[in-house]
Length: 252
Image 1 (tube, rainbow, N blue to C red):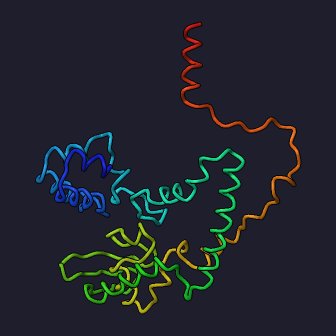
Image 2 (image 1 turned 45 degrees about the vertical axis):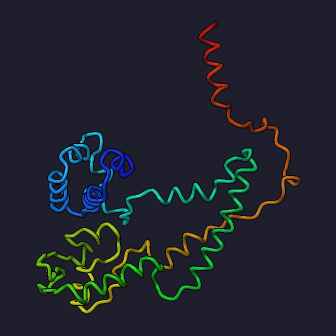
Image 3 (image 1 turned 90 degrees about the vertical axis):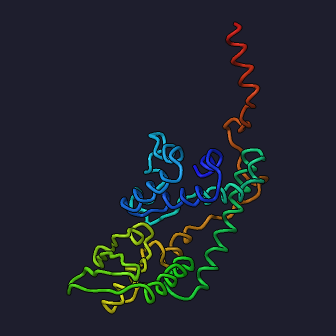
């Protein structure tokens, strides 16, 4: 979406505003940023608000919170595509074998690396949490109500309500990412608790190791494989061959 947008509406100002709209985590902020876009370029606003581009597909304010992931770009699949790039050009059996070996090596490297880590959290969530701790210390003031809800005010004058039992914040960053935002960290410290205990289970070291406990087993070389009675796997037809077949049928 960003690529198509920049082709039609070039310039850093519009690009930055488009990302502000996409990164809005609440509906009021999303509406505010869309109004800013409208003031900058009405045609750009119409393009983003078109029915073919529903915000449920590109704006955090409309994302569900069950996945605990606020990623908006497809770098993950692009990285995996690059990882298997050389194998894709090979015949089917050789392709699958190279992918299997690559994944087997990768799983061992990931598992060994995580086992060497100190602490209960994975490195990247810990880094995000440490940043939010610094922001909470310098920017947030918490006011409790004697229960599980805490009102957090920032020096900018904004206020957000944190529910420690439900693990939610009205800014929705904690809900979306699974890592306590600065408001949540401030509220957690106000209740004399440890923010690390409020990080989503998917970011725990034990969860990561549990995922990589399902090992890919080694396989003997092809010369030791049992002969199959099934027909051999053939490569897919070339596009031009399929096209000529369709032409021939039409001519008949």
